[in-house]
Image (cartoon, rainbow, N blue to C red; front, side):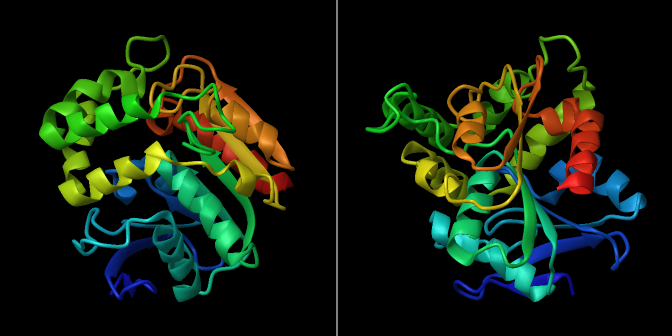
Length: 277
């Protein structure tokens, strides 16, 4: 069965494993709220081309166990490492979106890069958008907390009202069908209220700047110019400057949901990155 036990607490976590077993391995780590279905425009075409594409539903998301605990960043990173160990994967390209990028970074600093050859941070929250002592230009943490309060009051409205900005639908080049957008809004409810609230609380104090500076492997940073969830200057551009071996790709007019609006461009950049790194 496509489940493995979390090394943290034994929670059953659902995974998918597409493509040939001998293919170059790409492991996808999801954004908050979404399960592996968010990567359909990456996993399906890449698997058809011969890559082995692996992903899993984070605890409290999708088909994984509904649990109360384990939403601290260390535990989430341990779950990522648990998947790599369960499938005995090596020479992995580890791809994380949004908060998933933070899980990727913490997994590497906490468990090392013995199984991982390269990483990609796609519209990542890394190193963290909030203002702090070493990041005075960041977002006021109270604004992030206010957004989290809005989520807790009415997460259905939070998802529906945020969809246009998430995909930057008002900008050229970001055409998605209303049906797709509605489906993604509905899929956000695949995460429990507990999971969504806990992950939102993580963002307030997220600061991975010291950890990014220690990552000794090639990292592709992909970010949109109009990312409202993780503004380019506070996250993607800053991450690329901190990383010792980074390649920054900036997508004009792209928002946070560039995995859908710019799927072909993202896939091309992932292929190029995996071929040369």
